[in-house]
Amino acid sequence: MLPTAPLFGAIPGGPEMIVILLVLVLLFGANKIPKLARSTGQAMGEFKKGREEIEDELEEMQGDDEDADTDFVETEMGSNSNNNNS
Image 1 (spheres, rainbow, N blue to C red):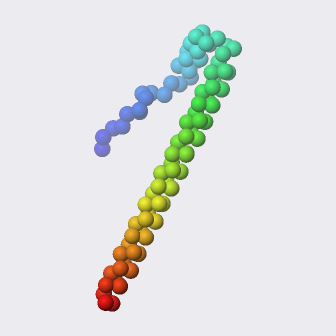
Image 2: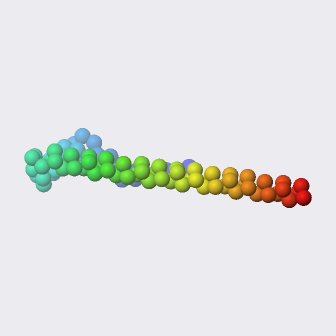
Image 3: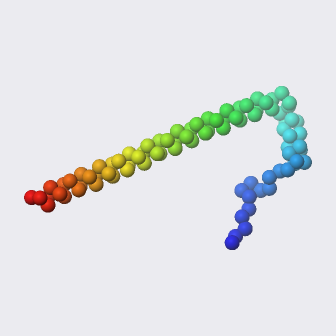
């Protein structure tokens, strides 16, 4: 079995997270971090909504294809039985 590696490398632990938070505070300032988090959350919500809409459309398209296939088969079966009776 092949060893698997994490997609983004190792997940930062306690000390690394503190350093990351300090860098964020230095870059953006303490006042802008909540705004940044809020806008990131809103963007993630919009992305999720868009993804769900696309998934719904794909499911509808698959349902339409299955209905069309069933109608085609029923039509063909009906025409074949009519040909056999003649």
